[in-house]
Image (tube, rainbow, N blue to C red; front, top):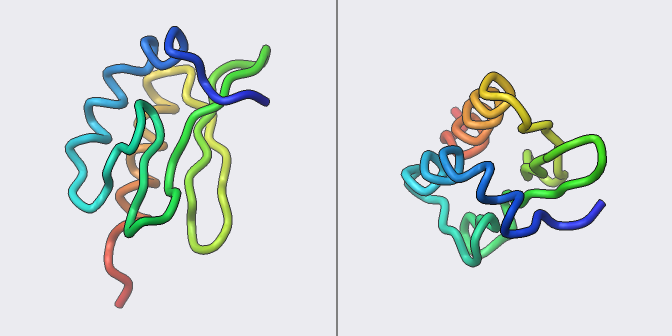
Length: 86
C-alpha cells in the first residue's frame, strides 16, 4: 500500500482541514501529522480505496476514509487518541 498521492489527498481536503484544527497535532507535510515529535497519522491509497493509519497507543490502526461517515469515525478516533488519560 503506497502513501496517498496529492490527487488522493485532494479528495480528503475537507478532512485534512478538520485535522489541522486539532490542538496538539501538527502537519509536517501534507497529509502527514505528528504529535509530540512522533508520527501520528498518515494516509495510504490502494485499489480498495483511501485509508488512514492512526497511532493509538504504540501501534497504528488502519481506518478506511472513503465516505463522510468513515471520515467522522477517524476524527473521533483522533480526538480520543490525544485526549488525556485519567
